[in-house]
Amino acid sequence: MGRIIIKNGEQTEGIRKSCRLAAQALDLAGQFVQQGVSTGFINAKIEEFIISHGAIPATKGYNGYPMSSCISLNEVVCHGIPSEQTVLKEGDILNIDVTTILNGYYGDTSRMFIVGEVSFEAESLIKATKHCLDLGIQQVKPGNYFGNIGFVISRYARANGYSVVYEFCGHGVGVNFHEAPNVDHTSRKNTGQLMKQGMIFTIEPMINQGKPSTDIDKKDGWTARTVDGKLSAQFEHTVLVTGTGFEVLTDIHGDYPIT
Ligand code: MF3
Ligand code: CO
Ligand code: CO
Image 1 (cartoon, rainbow, N blue to C red):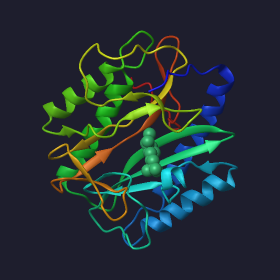
Image 2 (image 1 turned 180 degrees about the vertical axis):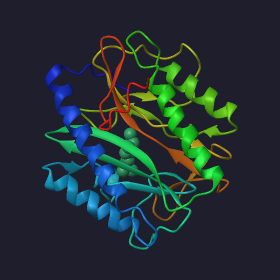
Image 3 (image 1 turned 60 degrees about the vertical axis):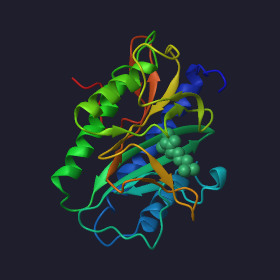
């Protein structure tokens, strides 16, 4: 783990632009989410959008990952590989995760989508996971501990009967895809490093209905699934530490700050 990069104004503006593009790619992807559409098709639309805006999909070729997005259905926790063979069906829940490189700067964001009508349990998990992200984001301010992000996330998740994935975490981002620090989604109060103005990192909690552990698919080497086959959900934003609090760089809908 290297040291945490403090971004200057020029870097921050470049990262902000890349973040906005990544979020726009998710908006576009959402338009194609419906029964009968393959995740491979959605990935192709994302790729075309990113490239046509002069950017590069960061995941393609990253440590051998083959696609321009990750699309993770139902019990898939993260790193689902889009495929023409994976066709959406009524009741599916899915996370779409996009990372862009625009003028050398990285933006990373993901959201949940639903196909038609989903179960009450699935809907509740998605709502709770989004709230976990929002609680984490509200901990972002100079002088606070990184550990307080995972503290509030895990406290809320467990109080609602869910578990928190500990095998994947958020991360510094912007100049590289995965920078220091690791941002754990389960951690103890007032532990870890201190946040400082100019730091940029993701918060991306993965919350499970059942047990927190994951298994990586032995054939493709990427797809992470819940060990018990129960549902998992995830939301991700890229966040800047400002002089007084936070700016959600991947928020293109004006959702933050939450009032
Ligand atoms: N976008 C993911 C993240 O939030 C990383 C995907 S890496 C890949 O960190 F190789 F699986 F694409
Ligand atoms: Co990320
Ligand atoms: Co991501």
